[in-house]
Image (spheres, one colour):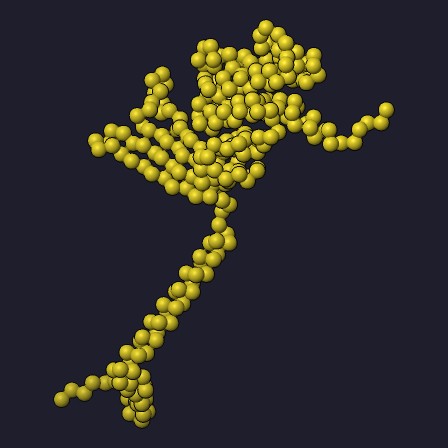
Length: 276
């Protein structure tokens, strides 16, 4: 018989283990199955509640730190009557492919509000992959329409009826992306102003100069109108569409013309008379 030799520490540890009582079973281990299920349900409910509270807090935090509203440049048909910044209140985009996948169209419906005069409007934009410029090979610009066609910068009673009608039609052409008609309309607007002022001359060039003679415009103002006349002639006689940027500038000049001839004199008449 062979006896194994162990160090003294081994025997001491065995003696210590035999003298120390074992711990009593945990009360948790002695619970019934129904109690355990109840506790598990409570734990899951508490966890779900915590996750929900975190989601709500994250959503509120996201709202507080969200980026500024989407902005876009658009022609304002309200008081501004020029291209201004617009806030996009709502946007829906629709993309469609043809059955043979050879053509794609992109449409977007936007509810806008001008950041200048706060006039609301609706814009529809459309673009098609088949509309390619044959000269450059690049896809054409998107077309857009505005609803409703608004009144423009002036109230109807501010302008003479004939001038107001031409102005509103020109705004419609501009907002409807019809540059040739808009160019013709700007020239017709100058014609209407000269006609209302009973200007003399056998052509528009001379009638514009007569506005200066009658004290309706300064010489510089008349020179600006001559530029509008040339733009309108190109649209009417050469069927040449002005660029969008040129039309925006032209409408700014036309707007200042109407203010100089009709709006400012009416406002000035409300001021006290000058002492002699």
